[in-house]
Image (cartoon, rainbow, N blue to C red; front, side, top):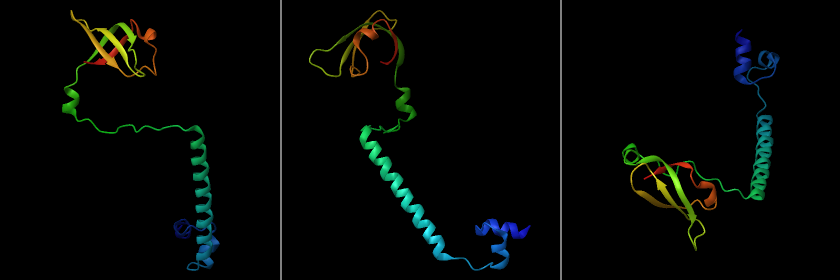
Length: 131
């Protein structure tokens, strides 16, 4: 009972070590094991860093700034139909949208999503929009 508990608490692999030599523990061996573990860990991290350099992937943070509820509640999100979507001339990122939000007026907005979507693929689609 108690011998097994002491074996677990002291990190010994055998109950004999606890019974025969309860206070003697090789300190150098533990430090050596920690050194080997540290070397393996640094080798793994350098390998991972080198692999990440090969991919050149850019990781974006999930949330840069947290938005409080008051700011969020001021937003006007609606599902709208894209009547027309066209590329903005002389622009690398912008698409010009003509939207139907259910009111009598057409809304025109610009969005910087040209590198992700083609203008033709968004015509007559339903999208979520912050008006």
